[in-house]
Image (cartoon, rainbow, N blue to C red; front, side, top):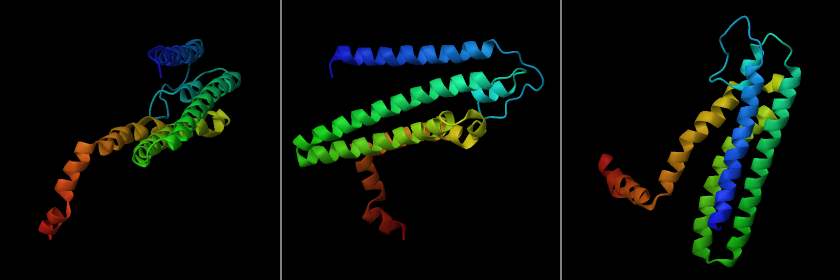
Length: 176
């Protein structure tokens, strides 16, 4: 990939995320809030905030579900297409290179699925049904972030060698 294409993709991601976040903030700022001021959620998400509003928020929920759902699905599809392209180009490479690239891609795809599937299930269906699902929110905010360092640490050759030295057969037999 050229440096220019990389910059364009990064800037498109930043601009898209900024516009999407700004849109949600502008929606929330205009709402009147009354009654309880405690959110029944792990973090300050849009749907729990909408529940605290004193007005009818059905239209806003539809707008948020539509924009976030479409954005999540488009991003997920773009990632899947990029992995299909990567995996299809592996056929022309050596067996060892294919194995290494395939094992890395499988880990990446696992993290992508762990991140996007809960988001898609949160924002694509009707918001009233899924917005209480704290487990889904916990999954795409915490679990995926915890797995990333672990997965990439275990991919490191030095780490693998150190683990083999530490937990190798001779070391395990010493513990018995």
